[in-house]
Each structure stands twice: as structure tokens, then as C-alpha cells.
Image 1 (tube, rainbow, N blue to C red):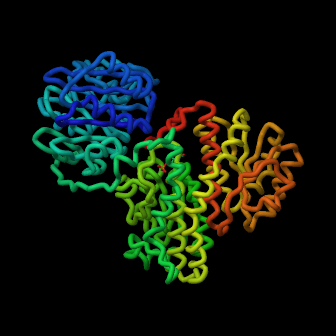
Image 2 (image 1 turned 120 degrees about the horizontal axis):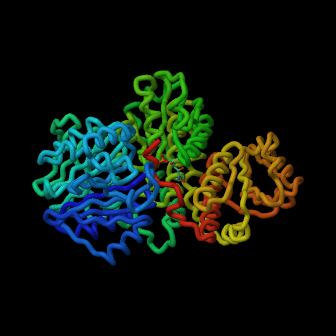
Image 3 (image 1 turned 45 degrees about the vertical axis):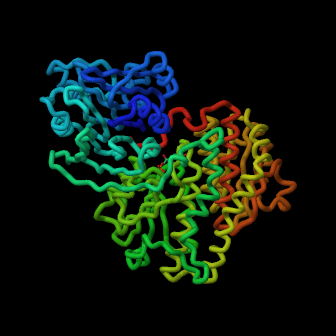
Length: 608
Ligand code: M6R
């Protein structure tokens, strides 16, 4: 939520910041702004709206400078407006701040600062940071920041500059992510690596309670107590091409189409077919503890939670490991009994979701190994987990998660196979059977994506409906939840994901000809049961669209088909989710919705 970028180097900062903000826009897009410094002057431009509005404003009123800061906002305190857009300033307009997160004690700080004579101009919590720095400033920006952070509570990452201590950008992190990019005689400070990939792949991931000072003399780091610290830089293997649309209308569509390759890459090094083994070198050192675990507890939010529900079925079926799946946002407030024999699996695309991080932090010292399944190297989750399986999806820009979901379920499948073999419950022959089928999954995914006309036609046909039901049972239930989430978040149409067997306990009352049902019904152990649920809907004049590999047996029971290739029952989610993603995408596109940046959402939810 909110994207920050700072630049100090030989290039024109306005261009670097603007291009960077375009790549950060998925983190927030209700207002934007930037500030650049030229000599003793600060030039500022802020708008309500998107980066394209900021760009248009800058074209009409050009500004220039030598270094600067930019921000794209997802409002928390104060409505989206030009005045509330970042950067924010102190009383004299000499200190400029961009911020991501929430200053929880901002009201008491504001009261104190007003008593001391500070004048506030905005409704934001961010403005207190500028005034706090002003209050503590006596020539050194970093010293003022070190003093300011002592009185700030909450979760924040911010960057600031001041021509009173020129040619310098100072960043502080306590919660939301902040990274430093190191280029040729240039430095970047940003909320994530995506906006700097065009310039450099060398980055330093800042940890909590750390301060970075970027200046023409070099780069320095301090902790919040003011002690100098040394940090190591990392060379990323992500490329700038990965964050281009490459001919697709939207990032979401491109990312849907990347899924076969993502799964292929996830599997490529891991499957050892001759021996029926999965290679997960990241887990080897902890193998003894992992195979002795009593249960697994999966913690996640949103789409990652749905992947977790699929992981639960995999871990129970393949590894005979009792598994619970918990919403991080609920789990963190419960009095949960966790023991050192419990394996905790935190799943997060971004590795920065505030609820997921809070939930795992609450388990420190109580649980067994903490395994992160995450797509972002160097993220908070990765740094805090004992073990990590990095998903091989590459950067995901569309706010609606698609390829990271496939990467998560591919990784969970590998984990379940690995644990099944390590714990001794999974026969070599059964492992090989699943691994062989797993290898065919990318090709089967391509078959679906290359035949998208039927999904598109159905999406067009149903784009005027206001309510949808998504039904599934067993391993298709999480797919139904995920399909409904995709439709809701990008098209703003009401959609309910439900377990087929629960229909008769209430939701069946909703059924009429105005609420179509997408039934996820591959030929598996619950096929007949789902068929009964479909018949119950048809008996009440409901319209049913079936996603199935068994059209023959459904011929007279449903209204429309979305065919999928057959696969091993445990692997069907890799296939069934694709038509649902395309269905949601096509409806949203047809309705003119902003597919990559749906209203009210942000890609990574770094506030509670
Ligand atoms: O980065 P995470 O995987 O932790 O994010 C969790 C959710 O915020 C995320 O999956 C969200 O639900 C997406 N918008 C779904 O498309």
C-alpha cells in the first residue's frame, strides 16, 4: 500500500521517478506526487488520480532538479486529494517526506507538535513525520531522522530529503518494505525492486529498524539507535523484461499466460523421476525435524490462503500430515495452542502482508520450523522464516494474483511429495505416478489457454449478470473460492465461492435464473456428489456452467461447458483455475474495469 521511490544520481530525477512510479502504481493509485531539489529550491507536483495524471500535470508545468522523491498513494488517513497526496512538508517547506504505512500515534504527536507551534496542512498521518524531523533538525538530516523515529509508533517506511542538508536522501524502515538500489554512481530507494530493474539489479534489502543514507559520498546504514551497521548487497536475477506487458493488453492477461512456464520452471530442477524423489535442497538441513512434525499449520491471506487450502489436501493425501489452514488476519488474534512439533507454513506472494507477518511473529519461540513459501527474494517473510521455498513466478504486477497462485500450488505439491517420501508414507510408485502427471501439467495448461474462445464467449454472454455462485468440493472447493475472488476483485460483480455440499444449508435459497453457477467438477472422488448438487440447482431454475473433463456424464445436467483436459485428481486445480481467471478477466475487460488496478485494492497489503 503506497509506493515510494527516491533517486540520487546523474540522470534526470523527474524521468526516473515517474517511470519508477508507473511500476509501483500497483501498490496504490488514488493520488501521486513527486519532489525534486535544485540548489536550495524544492519543486513539487502532486495530483489526485493516477500516475498518468501526474505525468500530464508535469508536462503542463515542467519541473527539474538533481535528486528527488516520488510517491503513489493508497489512502489510509485522509481522503484521496491533491492536498493529502505525498510528498508532505514541514512548516517551512524545507523537509519533504514520502511514506508507506501508518503512524499509529500520529494524533498525540500532532497535538504535541501543534502545541510547539507547528502548523499542519493535511489530514494525513504522514505530515507528522515532516514536522518531527523539522523539530529535531540541526543540520544533519540523518540525525533528525534518528531522533524522529524514536517517538513514532506503528508500521512505516519513509524517505525524506532537505536542501538544508543537500544531495542526500534518508530512508527509514519499521514494517513496510524498503530497498536500496546501487547503480553506476547512482542510488535508488524504493518500496520494491520492480521500479529499479531498468537501472540496476544490485540491491540491499533493509531490515526493520534500519536507516539508509544515500549521498554523493556513498551509502551508509544505521540502526534506529544511531549505531552504524554494515549491509550486504544482493544481485537479483529478475530482468526488466519481466515487468513489461509484452504485447498483452494487461499485466493480468500476460501473467495468466505465463503460468505454464512458471509451473515448468518450478518443477524443472525438483523432480527426480528415476528415484521417485523430489529435490528441495532448501529443506535438507531441517529434514529430520520436518519429518517428525505432528501437524502443519498453513497461514495466509487472500489467494495465498486458497493455495493453502489446496496444500492442505496435498499434505494430508501425500504426506499423511494433519494440516490446518488459517486466515492470518484471524489467527493472529486467537489463543492458539501451538507446539514445537508443529510445522508452520506461511504463504505470501509479496512476503510483506502485514497480517501474515504479525501471525508468524506471534508464534516465535512456540512453534516448530517456520517455512515461507514466497515469491519475493529478500522480503520480510523470507528474512524472518527459518526455511524458504521461493516460488518461481517472477514479478507479478497485476493486483489480482494469478501466476503466483499456480507457482504456490506447484511448490506445495513438491513439498507434499517431498514430505511424503521423507516421512515414509508415500510409496515410490505413487510418487512417480504423480510426478509424471505433474510434468504434463504445463502442456495441459497451454491447451486450455490456446483455446480460450469458449471462455470468452461465455464471459461475454454473462457479463450483464450481477451475481454468480462458484461451487466446488474437495480439491475444487478452494478453486471455486479463488474463481469467485477473481471475479469480485476485478469486475466488482458479486460472486460467492461455496462448498457444493453446503448449498442445501442456506445458499440454495439464492438460486434463480438470475444467479448463474460455475461448477468446478472434474472427474474425481466427489464427481457424483457434485452432480447431485448441480441437479439441486437445476431443479430450482438455476443456470449451470460446468468446468469438467467429463462432459459425457454431464450432458443433460448442465447448460454450458468449459472443458478441461483430464489429469490426476490432486492436480486438477492447475487446470480448473485457468478458465476461471480468464472468465473474470474477460468480464472485467468487457465492463471497462481497470483490470490491473482494481478500485480500493493494492497489491501488497502492508497495513492491518
Ligand atoms: O502477498 P500475499 O500473497 O500475502 O497477498 C495476500 C492477498 O492480499 C492477495 O492474495 C489478494 O487477495 C489478491 N488481490 C488476490 O488476487
